[in-house]
Length: 176
Ligand SMILES: Nc1ncnc2c1ncn2[C@@H]1O[C@H](COP(=O)(O)OP(=O)(O)O)[C@@H](O)[C@H]1O
Ligand SMILES: O=C(O)C1=C[C@@H](OP(=O)(O)O)[C@@H](O)[C@H](O)C1
Ligand SMILES: [Mg+2]
Image (cartoon, rainbow, N blue to C red; front, top):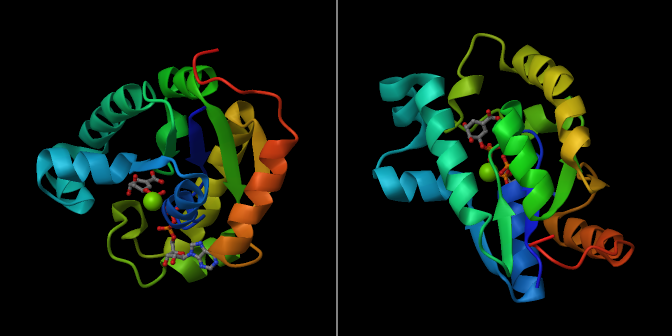
């Protein structure tokens, strides 16, 4: 079975919905960020502190390249994975890419108390989310096979919406 890849902004629900989707479809679940944390033994903020964003992005590209070789996998990516053109090419080639599209206001509400996202550790995180969304939304759309409204309904409802959208697609192989 094919490889399903979730993309979207921080707080879009990629990790939460991805895990549920994998359970429902009896597929393995992986998360690029979790993989990086498992490999390095430190948190994402610590990687940003020690190696900067560039260092994190190198690790992210490596993890993406390796994980997307698997089939039968639901993969949650980090929100910034689409910034790199090489990553975007990989995403398009290696799976069905699902963009969880969520308005900035909801992203802000979901992430405001979470300290694990170094890019939001700024004076005005709300404005930062809006800026990142403006830059990234076209990149998410560029690689997405499906765009799903991830702002309405609980994760279970998101899974049902994704399943419905997947049924309309005729892309059945990860290795196309
Ligand atoms: N559909 C949803 N409805 C309500 N809350 C959600 C939904 N999806 C995710 N959340 C919550 O939003 C926060 C961020 O979700 P997460 O899965 O970590 O997003 P991402 O991996 O895209 O950054 C978590 O606290 C999660 O429980
Ligand atoms: O948007 C981003 O650039 C990032 C998103 C995070 O993942 P989530 O999208 O799962 O929060 C994580 O990869 C890192 O903090 C950078
Ligand atoms: Mg996540």
